[in-house]
Image 1: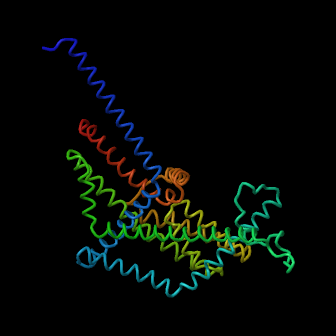
Image 2: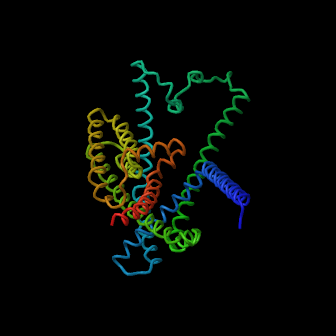
Image 3: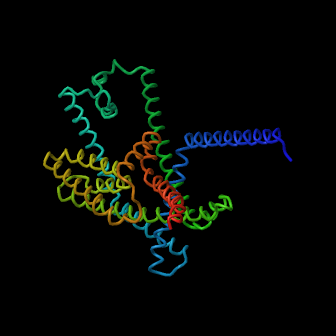
Length: 374
């Protein structure tokens, strides 16, 4: 028999154990948050590779409904078709894309300068906006005078100019290498995930405790199904936005209509915010052709946005995602402010994963009540 002293000792031991376990849990959770904060860019890069793998797997599965081939052959066909389309676009329109990209960049820069001047003429302070880089190519009044043989630049001036040129060139090279490197990392991860999706699925399930493995299986399969349907619907939406924007701007007579259509299609991957950015770029680029063209481009943007929001999304994605627009927009802004462009671009798939998990646990929590009522 145990006495009151033994019961008190046992209660103290249980309390100490609970406090220890809780403290360890808090420390581990804080460590996980700290790890996510410092390595957010890498984690987003890996997640982008996972999304690419899910998209390739979804397209291979769609092809499997038409032809009965092994998964590896279907994936090879999908990759070859995508590579052929991309190569054809670059081969047939590479020069046009490069030319229109330069024209579009120069046009937007000049329009932003005009907007800045317009705001300043009307008493609006533009010091809160970073317009400094727009006038980087403008001639400097201090160096505008024509040098004479008797006013050669000093050695320090040459050295400082050379250092500035080298610094800017190094930043450009490093930025290009970083972008290309990230692209190939995402491409490699996507292909690796798509080649053997079952291996990574089983690996995730193996990490779950045995008693929770059935629940983890349901959640992982539902997340994969949701992301597959959303990505296929998103690809269809992006292609439709690209075609409508390209043809519409070409009919209006806006220069660089092809590259504007490409950027509108790519930005359609980001709901709400992407559409606003795409429309702003289109309107700014159209201002160079006159107010009538800009107004026509704005009306086209409204039509494309209505097509995307009220036709394509409800029809194509009605079984994939059902997230309130205000909730999605707030989550996008939050991740965009905290993590930058990665958080803004990947906010929707992250929220889709969270929604699947919340819906699953909510359904499980409602089962006992349903059983009792029955």
